[in-house]
Length: 564
Image: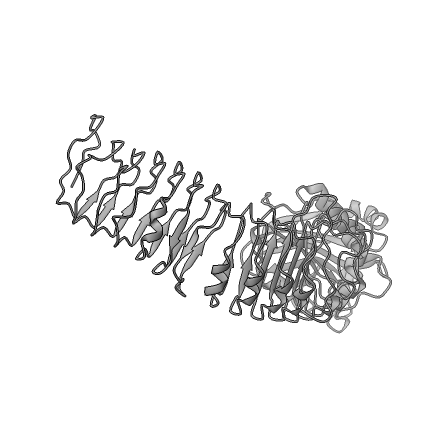
């Protein structure tokens, strides 16, 4: 049955009562004819209509299975459902002015799917029959503060979605009947003030999220009873201290808290050798101060990623150095941090601000162990990168021990900010290619002062080869060294388009006296670097102890030497 959208009538006087299916998008009238009561109607679909109500009196639709009134912006009340005993699906999605669901819906025991998501004005939803219900969607019902009264016994397979709703408390019946639940996602329920203790009886629960529940102040004390919990997300809540029983969650892999205003300090309980499976701990912007982290945090033996960004501590527990599995540590925007902890042995990714990187650059070089990637969160211009590059390689050059062939002192640095990729101007020799040859200045090698070559490149890299080529190249005395890169370097990051990598080629690792045929380093006039993969931007600089003084002496020799 079709109705033309161009109709200009204010009301419709007649619709046939022998309809089985009535589909009309943009139904133009505000109500139905009073005589419309089709006993055989099975499907009623009136999306984007102008209805304020379907009808005011009780009507009988014994065959009706599905009602779809989605996106009915003017609809304020649902009809009386008493005369719809076989109703299975009700779709009221985005009925933004709907204020009330008729209580008679609680008598419809055959309803399978009920969709009320984005009904932002909905305040009254007295009851729902769950005997057949498999899907209840209350997402973004921000004005609905009370969960409807449950009629009947819930089916095991029911899905209930409440993300972004205004519900203040969860009904105990959910946990009473749904002991099989594996996921309980309560994101952005701004009015939720408490979680019932009964959820701790959900022995099958694998994932619990209360992220964005901005009035929630605590988790149940018995939360440690959730033996199978793998993920707990409590970001952007008011939870100041997790229950001490949380350390009994020995299958927990991901734990997240985040977002506290000034004056409110988060405190993590002693680990006590618990949380044995925890791999990811996010305490971003928790206003942690000294003592907010437990001294025994080093006993988190499985921890791989620790995010402490945006906190206010001045120092960290020494036991952080004992986190033997830790691969990534984020201390960016920790403005009050005065000392860098001893880094864990397997750490290879460190997130930090430029001011901190510059302050602790010597420690980053000398204590780095397996550290290969430092993410500079605020490195957004050339001057910052120049400062970092200068400080990085100055720190390398000031090291007291000999720089041997086995110590490549490579460090990869990348930023995920979408600024145009650019090599810092600190690198004198620059270009764009997969292979670069740079003419060396006369007498460039100064014994006991020349350290090696500082190199910078963009994008990902599989391997690279460095060669020293004789001024009179006879093809026999070329010094060639394939540089071994770390696992971190060979795997592209999520931000590989903007990756900027720094590494050092020590002269001791490139020069081989047995292959020199009696020549000295100054008989070699070209340094060539061959990069694998796509073309990339590169930069190169000769690095000396007492660098500025030595480089000033060499500057005149470089004036006529350009990259070839």
